[in-house]
Amino acid sequence: MKTNQTILICPLNWGLGHATRDIPIIRRLQTMGFKVVVATQSPLKELINEAVPGLSFDDFPGPKVTYTKSAYLIPKLIRQLPLWFKWLNKERNITQQLVQKHRPVAILSDNRYGARHPEVRSILITHQLMVKLPGALKWAEGLGHRFILRLIKPFDECCYRILTGPTRWQVIWSIATPCPPTVG
Image (tube, rainbow, N blue to C red; front, side):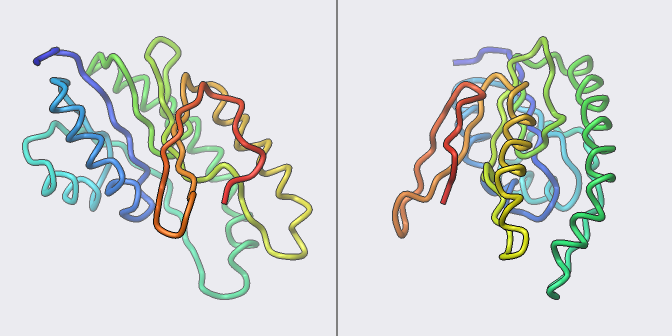
């Protein structure tokens, strides 16, 4: 069934996990007759193109986030927060341009909180509704959760995964909120 409608998929380019979870979704959308445009960068572009050849791609850069294996990971990530907020606005601008160019009927945003559009059905795919923090910062988990919910709220839907057993994952769809108070 060919629909001639476009779905824009925007995976976050922090590692390969976002792309690998989007590949089955891309395949399913194709079998439903949708044209899929993937907006990302290398190495995700190559990974997705190898798994699903013949897709249309567009460039969607992301912030350069750095991690550390030392005990100073949380302070390092906190220092990068201003960069993330700046990128949130950049993502909105890039998404506006992508919508004008491709005219999608929906946007699937994989952990890109700025990849949404008020005139296009926007669905967030995420795995993080609750940030778990170490001992001394545990008090801030509730604040982090409320902040994440605030980022989710502008989306029409949110798809997230909850580990429901030792090897079983369940996908749950909701309308933006409510989300569960804790996950995991």
